Amino acid sequence: EKWVEQIRELVMQVDSLEELRDRLIELYPDLDPSGFAQVMGDALAAAHLAGRYDILEGV
Image 1 (cartoon, rainbow, N blue to C red):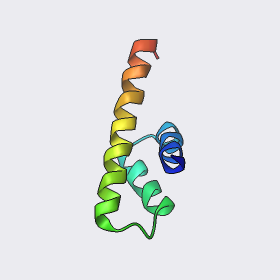
Image 2: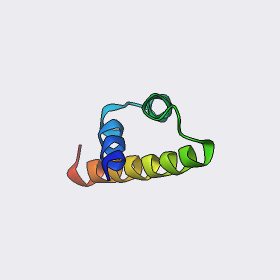
Image 3: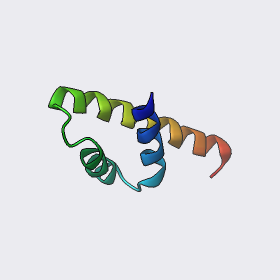
Image 4: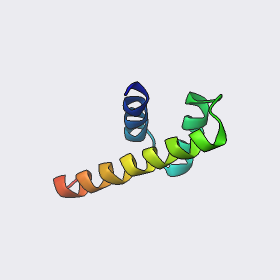
């Protein structure tokens, strides 16, 4: 889905979870809290996987 790709790109751009949180709020200002929890969960999972990939690649 489009929003998943937006989150993936955002995860690759930010330097901290706090920055990710703030940028997600900017991206989805009208998202209800339960929807935001889902988006944050997806974003954190993407960040975790990106970190694992970096480790495997030796970055």
